[in-house]
Length: 139
Image (cartoon, rainbow, N blue to C red; front, top):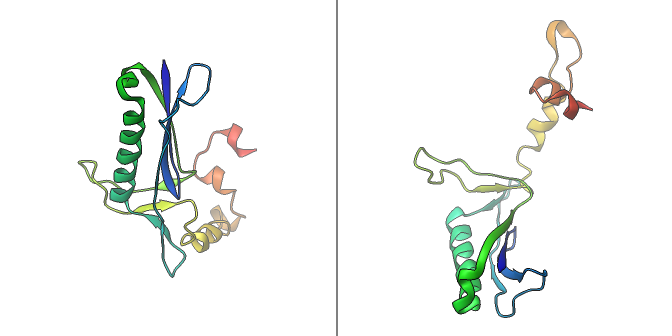
């Protein structure tokens, strides 16, 4: 029995099968590197097509390393970016690049949100209060 670990990060897609005791299954480690696009206005973007191709390549290489034992994979654990945002159309196709956690283009707008006045000139409540976060998250 194996579990495939899949990590899609800012610099590469990685896949590896691990055995029930947590040891890596030899020959299954795969890594496909790529680079984010850095824009002059503080953007850090990933091309969704490049990401998908890298994931497919890493998973395929991992499965090839399993050989005849690929059927013993019982689960997949995945980790993908820290934060990311991508708009999709109604059919699930990307409308935008993936905007990564490192993208700074919204920094000014985020700072401005701290100064939006509350009702009747009162100081603005914290952003979490304005967006409807549950009380436990407000502390």
